[in-house]
Image 1 (tube, rainbow, N blue to C red):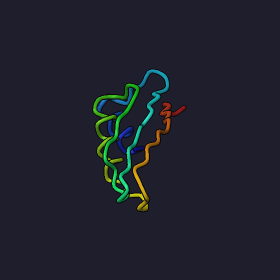
Image 2: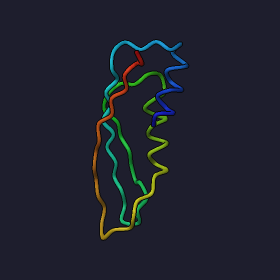
Image 3: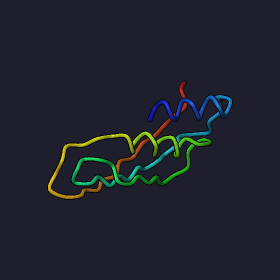
Length: 79
């Protein structure tokens, strides 16, 4: 996900105004594969699409059913 941010930041000419806050919601099937990913918040350029593609490749242990979770991310420009 850091790679998505860094690529988008480079494409934006290295300019970012303030922190970027994105919440990623993930739905995992009982086989451990990611069934769906959504994001809330606005990233730079195609950052959120890149993040969704990356998260869809994640694999989790098999379970007895589907599960859903979400996590927040904050990207801040360097000093």
